[in-house]
Image (cartoon, rainbow, N blue to C red; front, side):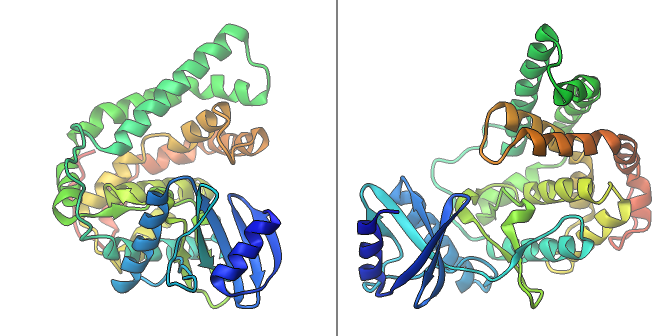
Length: 342
C-alpha cells in the first residue's frame, strides 16, 4: 500500500494506522479504532453489493457475518485510483476445522441461519436458469476439463505422483460423474429452483472451512460475501457436506449430525436430505482440486492438491460405503420414515 493511500484512508476514516499486513486477497490494518480488514474491488457495483448485503442480513437478524465500517461521511465504499475499497471490522476467530465434528456442526448451524436471512432478495429481471441449476453447469464444466487433463496425461505419460493417481482414479471418477449428471435431472430440483425466483433466495456458494470463523467464545461467523448470489441454497449444503465428509472419513454419523445441526435451525424435508445425499455422488473434491491446480487457480498448490487427492484415493471404499448407506441413514434419522428410492 502506498503512503498516499494510507494517508487518504486515515483522513477518510479519521483514524491512525499503525501497521499493515497482507493476507490472502485482503490487508489487515492495526488502527487506533481497532483491527480492520480492507479489501479492494475493480467494480463499484460489487463493493456496493457486499456492503448492502451485509446490512440487510443484519437487519434480518443474521449478525454472524462481516460488518463494514463507514467513513466520516457515512459511506462504506472508499474509492481510490480506479479501485473501490471496503473496510470491515476484524473478527477475532480461527478458521473452522473440518476434522472437528464440533466445528462442522457449528458451521452447519451458522449456514442455516444465513439461509434463513438470505431470502426476500428480488431476482434481477430478466433472470433464467436456462433449464438447469448452476451447480450442474459447474460440474459439467469440471468434468470436461478433467477429461482434457486425462487426455494430456495419457498422451505424455504421468510426470509425477499426482498424475499417477489421476490415471488410477480416472475411470471411477468419470463413471461417477457421468452417472450423477445423467440422474440429477430426475431429482425433484424444480422446487429448489422455484424458491430462488419466488422467494428470492441467496446461496453463499463458497462454504469452505476458511470462510467460517470460530471465536474463543465458540461463536461461528460466515464471512466473504463476494460469492453470494441467487442460487439454490441446497447447493451450499452439498458443498459443505462434501468438503467435511472427506475430512471426517466419510462417516455416516458425521453426515447425520451435521444435517441435524442445520435442520434444528432451518428445517430440511426428507426429500431435501435425500437429494443432498444423492448429489454427493459427484466426486467434487477430487475434480475441484485437480482442475484447480491445472488451471493455476489461486490457492491451489501441487503439494496441497496431492495431499487431498491421496486422501480421496485412500478413502475410496469408505466413500462408496457412505453412498450406499442411504437406507440406513433414513431409517435412523430424525426426519422420520422415508421410502428410499436411490
